[in-house]
Image 1 (cartoon, rainbow, N blue to C red):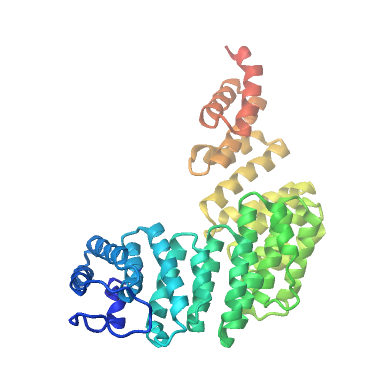
Image 2 (image 1 turned 30 degrees about the vertical axis):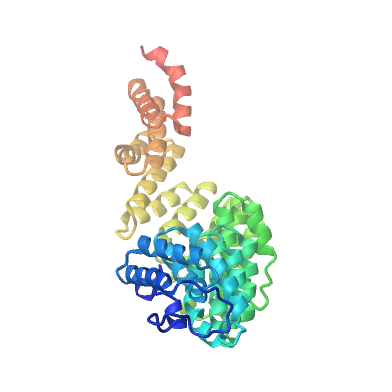
Length: 441
């Protein structure tokens, strides 16, 4: 916001004495007006600003401009009027007055009194930047950039306009403004700004596209980026996002290749720069399992589990290992792997319930339905993880049915439909209810 202490009548600098009856001899064109009337309005506005009575100040300044439009102090007072309007949140009015002020500034900044007008550059830049944050004010900002204002003020204005457009979802317009900012940037800031334009901005925009269910557009944008000269941090982030999107789109081989490249890159980096490696290992191992590349998945899982960096990814890696063991009909080994998860105090509650559910599944596959129920029970009785609860209820009901406990099966099927009516397990339960319910009653 505009600092209230900065709001003063701009023309007080231009018009140092209000006690004289006639305006000072300035080369600017002016229309004579009764000095007493000018002075009275002027003092009223000045006092109102000092007392932070901005509506009163606005009324006085608007009257001053309306009655004495050609009088230089009235023209210069437009800056103070725009500031007061902004403080009051009258953004559209402030924008209109600011544009008039900038036109006046452009016209007279080349006159003999241009040195005096330079006192208003910073205030004008501050006002324009605030308006850019509140409204689409490209016209206003462009007018300021054409002024002979200090380059640092024009740079900060163009840079802010670019960032505001980006926040409003206008990627190309943001890049255009930031390109202008780059031309105005101090030499020591150019490299960072170019990196921001070339890599940071596209990466964030691609992430937004992805989150807004536009994965193809996100991939197209990421593929346009030239990564040869990209800093390592940006290259890693861009590759990772590409792989995530490809995996979501079921382009598993393409995603796997990128994850493999990331792991190869990690080998050349110091350990304090590869905190992301366990995540990549986990993603790649998961894709290997999906693609039934079990030998590669096992090798990667064993490497990750022996690595101190794994941390919280250990449980997820063990789940993948158990899935491989189930796929290869190594059911006893799968139960041992799941027991490792259950025995660890470092795993989350969800990991434990998930391991119990999966242990129930393995026992179900082995035909140990009574033992499967033992594992399903805790998952069915908890309520914090509805996905696993609904899955466990369905499987427990199946176990009861296979064991001949029709009433217990019926109770679980009905409970599942009642609690999770829109879930896939509920749909399967409804189908079973249609079969067994008539035989129970």
